[in-house]
Length: 142
Image 1 (cartoon, rainbow, N blue to C red):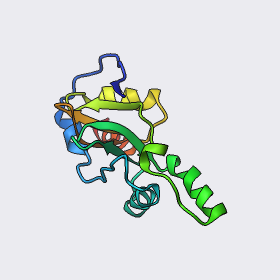
Image 2: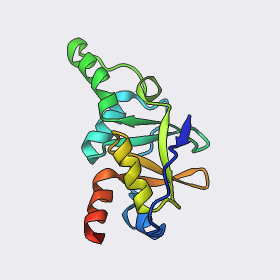
Image 3: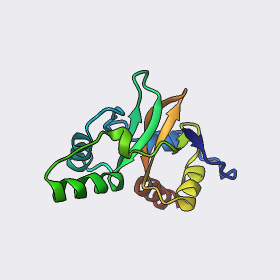
């Protein structure tokens, strides 16, 4: 399940600000992707999280590096990786819209512990936005 977090209106900075910091190069995982492969993609690429898309490219979840710790620990104890992304992902995904301005996205990161969230456009994942990039943009603008 995906949902937008209700955010109070912020100062209008224009959606081009989010587009300027949007990550368009990110791994997209499928629910059936083996968890070992998914964890390796996150770590090797330096990604905190990746969206999980179904066969119609709809967002069905998100997998974070933190989600990968349990299967990684299990593998270190038993010398065997098991499971797939669907077994470890979060199906309750907090997203922002491409039209959201920088202040709204900053308020979202202030209210939740996530380091990265999907950015939606026309019901599809257009990219990801990182908390660190939002903070850096606020510093540049302030």
